[in-house]
Image (cartoon, rainbow over all chains, first blue to last red):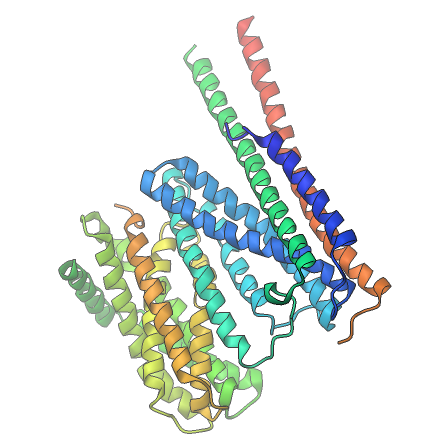
Length: 231
Length: 215
Length: 54
């Protein structure tokens, strides 16, 4: 039931990623300041943006779950957070590699986006222990949804706080965010962002299908066992 | 709603006065951490951003103790069996926590000045403390509710609370630094951030707390 | 800091894209393991039904 349209989505994702890689390495020019290293931008930043929107989307799905009581929304919210956490690992690692290549250190505290991302990531890691230490299914869904909403509201607030803390003490190091990008770079970036979004949706559907399949299987097994017991 | 919140609050405060479970423990904890910092940093006096950081990290950590105890009484006597509006419960718990925090700080701030602070105490710290306490109380009561049904409650509380309090730490520590002879900062900006944080978490808590706690 | 020379920068860029690819591969492997478990479970259920039919 979640598997519908999975194949066309997967194909679109594959084409998108192929196109992105081609654009990044054969079309987009080398950055004037950073040179070739700046290519990391096209994988790091889309991953971060998609992960953050995934976290916030999980909050909206959680609102839907609490409003309707439909457990499927809780499942979607859970899987959205799960996918965002996986991308989040990629964001932190690629960010660290970029920092090493561009500034000589594996971690820089004066990069507000990366620092806020770390805080958000640490918060969302607690989703798993919170969710899985509640046994009752309905209660588990309800508490997880409340967490998803609270954390979703926290994401923008945290970004404001970290940005306020950093801008005045340090000059901005990174010049390549949206504003000053030449057109060809921006185009490549937008294609990369779309591909990453497609990847996120595809993986989410895949995960949901697999979760759904094992749920159905569990129900089937229970039914068969009940029949065997009564026979 | 206000009336039932008032009733729970009165019950909690009476219990705290009788058993003295939260506030004295928090005060003791704060003083122990000051001593830890004295030896850990090997400094007799602190000033500027270091003093402000030590003070706020200590206060945040002590808040965990209060949050962990917040629903302890309910689990024993099961007051939540009564059909009380959940938002009223949140309001009562947040207010109780706010009062505990203020009570702790009445002792903890002079103790900090006495034990570790180089420059004298500036009364300008009071509005920062009050604004930060509102945020701490709102978030603390919300987190206590969120963690109330989990198996490892005392583990989940700090893990949830500390990242959520990061903006409070940033704003409060930056606002306090100039008062401890640090470089001048933009006080209005940090008080504004604290106010924004308080507003967001009060509203979010009111919106979601209905779905927490069991009958 | 001046821009790194191409060969030096290449390693970092390859590393970053490698991390992305590895992440996806590991994820696919985990999903694959889950599918294998579902398949195994189905097999035992099938056997159960067969046994009961006879």
